[in-house]
Image 1 (cartoon, rainbow, N blue to C red):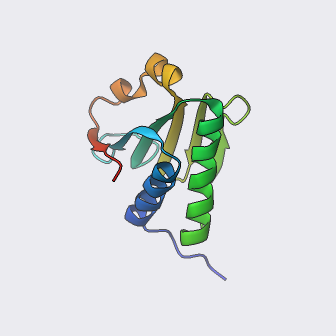
Image 2: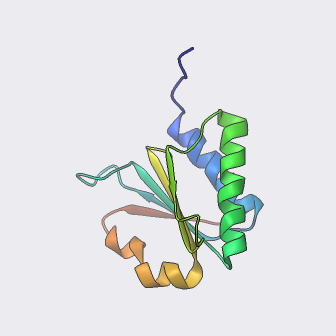
Length: 122
């Protein structure tokens, strides 16, 4: 059976719901499609207040994407210390940071040419 590709807009929507379900904070969607040589089309960046919350956010995203879209991340990094977990869904890469680690790396400014959308929880 061939798995049908996941619609990127649907994937983004489900990821954002997963973040919101466990009160992820300071959510930004970076559209990288107009930038040359990027590894994906979108970054979703959010913060958690502790390694427990960072783990909860990534767990919530994985569970929802698996349940609603029958998809799973191609790769996950950073679960050992849960300060910065990267979830790679190929077209969409999710970065879940603890606040101070996010401020330190400031990856939003590294992608200054990206179109940034602030996501406000409902």
